[in-house]
Amino acid sequence: MLYGIAAAATALLLTALLAALLRTPARRLRLLDRRRQREVPLSGGAAVVLVTGLVVGAGSRAGVAPPLEDGVRDLLVAGGVVALLGLVDDVWRLRRWVPAVGTAVAAACVVPYGETGVGGGLLAVGWVVWVTLGFRGLDHADGLAGGVGMVTAFGVGACAAIEVMEGIAVLMSVLAAALTGFLMHNWHPARTALGACGSMSAGFVLAAGAVYARAGQGLGESAGVLFALTAVVGADVVLVLVARRLDGRPVLRGGPDHLAHRLRRLGLTVPGAILLLGAGASAGAFVGVLAHAGWVGTDALWWVAGVALAVVLALSRVRVYGSRGPRRSVSPQVSAPLRVRSG
Image 1 (spheres, rainbow, N blue to C red):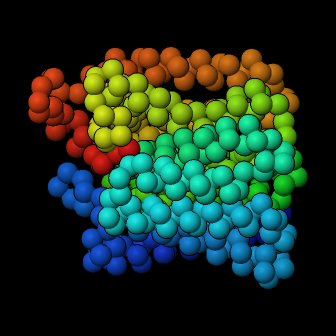
Image 2 (cartoon, one colour; image 1 turned 60 degrees about the vertical axis):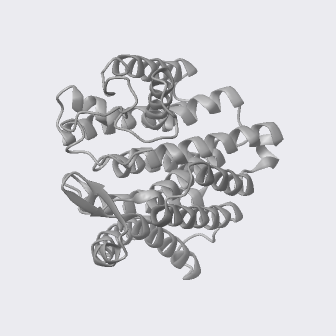
């Protein structure tokens, strides 16, 4: 207990410090996310990844934390590989299918097939890729990816603690604290961002950690719990894919059509939109933890899915695309407070 508090506090402070220190090198290396009239250094992702791995690994080696279980060690290594893939994407802007394939390979190496079975393991791989790329898409708005990631980490950590998976629980608490430290620089107006390096690695670790917590349990209920833990991510991905498809746009081409963009269209401020989405993520994670513990029935999970579907249907009616034609454009006033590069 005392170690968990100390590790979380250390991760928070170190991430806040390192994210600030890495801003200047990121600017010099042109690792920037261009916003209207200003550029945001992509230093937060490296800070979150480095601090999370350092705190978890150092605690285990020093003997003050439980020894790293094989699954936790594999998860840290695979998360680091995904972080490197994201960093390469930040620097050279890879084709969209490359991060997806790389994430799938990393996920296939850590899924516990002995408990999930081959079929369930393959489904888990697909879900990990879905969540990882979904978190990457959330990094378009100040505070969104970090806030949703922090809430999700608490939820997954609680599920792991219920299953007495100490290693996963510690990893999630440290990741949640690191994302909190990052948010000190990422709240509107953001001074740093996660980039693909941080958002993909965080999404990967959260998704794979949730798979470990649910491995060996019923497939249908597990799917409901996993969706509840990542409800905002799932709703955002579904909304974007369906909207782009219906409008005849390439589904892998970024655009100002995510949940936060549409809430801004409705008149919410940037902090207001992020707080609303954070509240939704918290509610979904809370229901997911209760269902995982068996304190609520599967009906509660259907309610989460129903609310998410209602939100998607309602916000899909908010106009975000310009007029059809060879040169489509979006009104510049919409994306002013939000970074326009999105998944």
